[in-house]
Image (cartoon, rainbow, N blue to C red; front, side, top):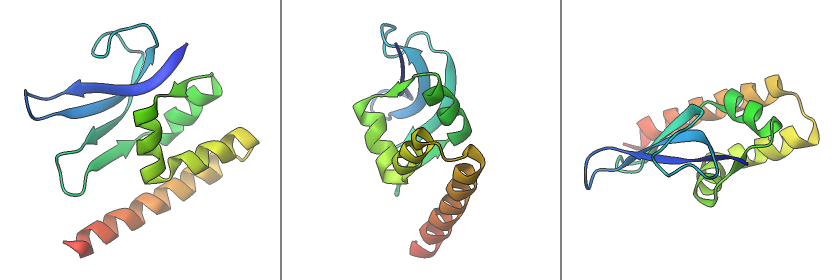
Length: 113
């Protein structure tokens, strides 16, 4: 089974993570198929970049997110778009919505500082 999960990078005590597509049985920092995002919890607010087009592609092939990745998807709002994708909504519509949500989040982060 293929999973969407986190792969730890960074120095000791300074973690950052890559969202990767990997086989369920490969080790945490071992082999993976593709990098689909980046997560840095050390910034304020946390940085999260996701290639949603690739996420939709892998989910259509049967990939499942881990619990921690599912929580990250929920914070960004990707989980709702994934459910709508599974229900049959077009990828183009969902990607346009994701782009507008990302732009709004960036704008609010800049004004909040």
